[in-house]
Image (cartoon, rainbow over all chains, first blue to last red; front, side):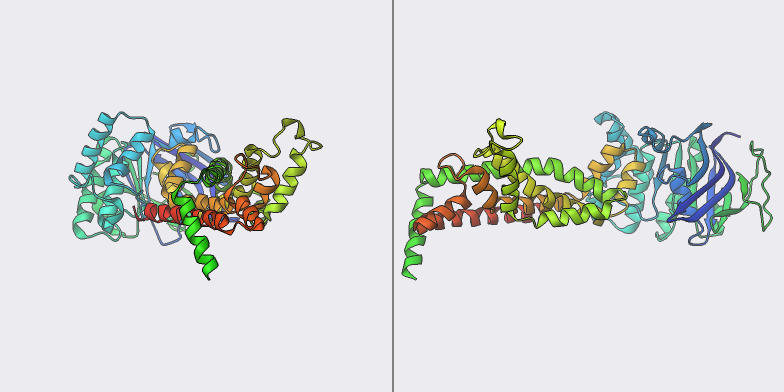
Length: 242
Length: 228
């Protein structure tokens, strides 16, 4: 297994309250992973942790077999490998093209490279021709597709998607589903959250089920280098190797 | 009523004829206040961002201090700096008292709390998704903050306008640190005070009209920016 994340004895707390409590979690870097759980289960917190946006209160997270340098100014280099699309994406003021170009610009890409990447990403998300549209005057579904294009243009190693299929019309959902399932074949690890129990079956991903900040079920348990095996039995241990 | 009408007519003539003294006074006012607001922006905006974005033990105290400094009387700032810049003061050897530089320093101190305080409010009221979005797209810490400022630029411009409004209209610092020297440190507000006390009501009124025009121009500029 090509593990990209390895989490050990990790907690995340807000205001002294523990919201995520993971004993062990290993994530394969070449698959689609689906995080399920009720509201407040810790799905978005886990995504923010995996995007290196929220630091843990305790414990360790390894990325590519190296510990994450929390608090270091160089953390942004790691963030450039894992891009998060929020549940309600924020588009910057300006055009669609300027939004998609932002991540490319901060990476110092040339204008030619940027144009090429933008065109590809917009084509992937069915937004060709939207380049000059005002990003603040788009519909909800279009906003999500622009946010997806903005993330895809960066060609990250890990794409973290927070409820990408919620509140979008049928056609947008189909387009996004098709896109999401095709990404692992391109070598992009996709970790997405959903409320819908049938998404995992339909998209063919590995499921990680969270309850109150703990993993209670993780199918596709593999031979992770963890001290504990994963059990899909409930009540389970706080562990998973996915 | 006739007195005011006559004064208005005379003041209009002074403005239209580009009276050299009026021109010099207006130029000094604008130059000093523009320099001061640039310096205040360089200090106040980063300070506001730091206070607005970070949690630290004395954050509430810092915000209370900024609020208090916003209401600081201009003559008190003038008095404190007079003590520092006068010959007996710690910086007396620099010979800054009664120079435009001293006025710039004073006006900067007046504007910094306003700019910083507005920036704190703007940053705290900004959409909380802006910074995480910039960071997850690969921005470094500084690039992330710059992107945040870009998204809330109207609020920052409003902060600068408010600061500029305060200093262009103040008289305490300009009088105490500039000395109201004709053609050198005389500003619109100090000239209005002087000329009115001398009975030159029309001259004071002309400067008052220009001061109001400057305020109007600033607000029009802000409105134009916000509509874009």
